[in-house]
Length: 286
Image (cartoon, rainbow, N blue to C red):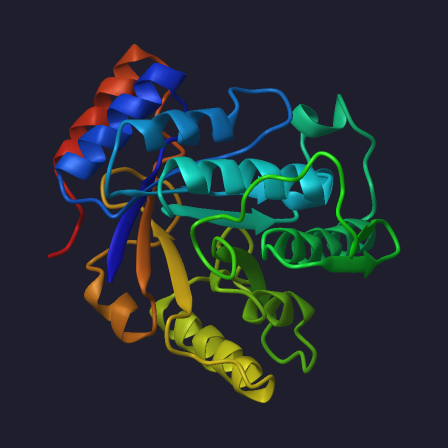
């Protein structure tokens, strides 16, 4: 089991400080997140990359459906180069809210899902460093011939920086398209659909079900299970969500990462101090 934490808010300078503090106190990863109109997550991660040497850097989450795929591939590759291969791209459809819809039109979920799939396919092709072409419903690329000027160098991590995808599990449903998407990539943020109203439904038992299903999907596609990441979001300090430690049972159920999600910490200097305290306490390994 490895351990990370999400920084719910921070200035660019504070994010670097918190990432360095996390590295100092034994954390394995620090995550930012993306909105349409907020501090830029990739600037935060790039700045942290230049001031750390071990801790991984990622997003939780990037709403990839709103990106042009080449823009996403470029920025992730840049941070991967800057960090010497420590970046992870976490993606999902993104929750529609005013931070999004005040700037961009609201698209149907099916359209966003299709854009997400195409964006990830092109992201993988562009970051491979090989000639590449793709024709989708929303995006098309033809890089079978050289372009001027040349694109960025390939990222450090091969075949590309790992992608963790939100995968929603609906008990009793035969076709699980969200899980199928997550199973094709390098990791999953599992979500359980079907709990009681007001509850996420995520339990150790639910996670075991999800892991078993994703493993079946990967085996059916001839993809290895070894090295695949299962990421559980919990809260060992506050009251956000319902997932709590100890982390051992979650690891036994198949989780490879535990990410502290402190979304209820207030956006204030006092809140930043609380983040410092929690990060300095170290990962909840007990």
